[in-house]
Image (cartoon, rainbow, N blue to C red; front, side):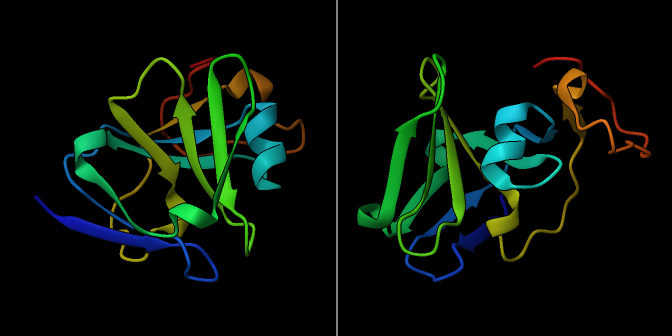
Length: 131
């Protein structure tokens, strides 16, 4: 197992996780685009037992973003942090951009049916219309 660490911009939220990684997706749904302010969100998924919040629980602001999910961000710096599937507590999903020692690449695009009209996907990764 390899260990990775991450933190928000201000450093108040810090976390670590270990492999194996269940997924690393680039999500093109409208909500991820709005939440991140980018053409897609980048999320890593690991089993919950492989994820640990080291510090900043009091800085993590969680809100209901849809019928099936919650999202969180740092209340101090605004860094987009986690994505919680309400019916899948056995996985941890978090923003790849917060990982400091990331040495692997995403493996698929999801919700490409909702992608920005002006953004063209040019890589060879699989493109999934929905989830």
